[in-house]
Amino acid sequence: MVAGARRRAVRDGDRQTDTAHLLHALLEHDPEARAAVGGPQRLARLLGYLVQRSIGYGLRWQGSVEDSGAIPLVPPPARPVDPTGAVDPTGAVDPAGPVDPAGRAGPDGAAVSTAGRDGSVRDTAGWSPAASAALADARARARRRGAPRVSGTDLLAALVADPRSRAVEVLERAGVPARELPPRIEAVEAAEYADGGGAAC
Image (cartoon, rainbow, N blue to C red; front, side, top):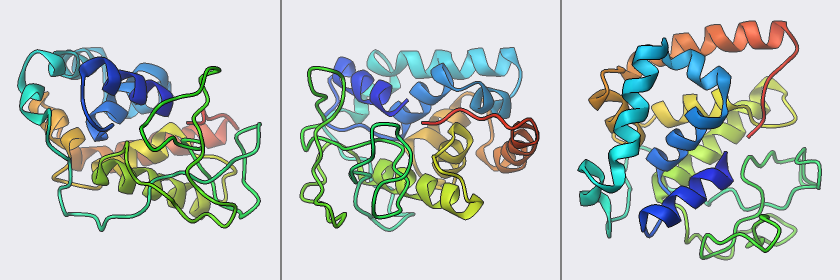
């Protein structure tokens, strides 16, 4: 999902990957996140707004940095992970994998790490401050659940936690009140983990 958000930012000509890119990729790839958003009509309307980003309202975002100020700026999720995508040696869960400072992926689709083995971040370019904060919050949510990896619903909950993010702006434009999503996310997670399933970012 995170790689998909990166690719979408490049295609749209945006200087950074922001929360709206993350929301778009999440809805495309994660069935639990789609279930939390609502029924087919609501989902279609929301995806329609997201698709219009490069030709409509999203044009005003180009050349600007998404930083709502609602969540303190934190380093992006750039800690190294093992090949299975599970838990790195420091014990942190990383939904995105290592990130290249320019937001580029390597030849095999994997990104290049910008962090040392101690988890210190060398460069924060490539992610908007709000997207960085959302990814860090998603990791924290997974840790609190004792999960070995971040789920799509962890990321969706983190995206709607910042009321001034671009993801929330798109949700509201599409008639999906962000304040309604946390209980829906909890219900989906309860059903998901009762079945022992769950997709990872």
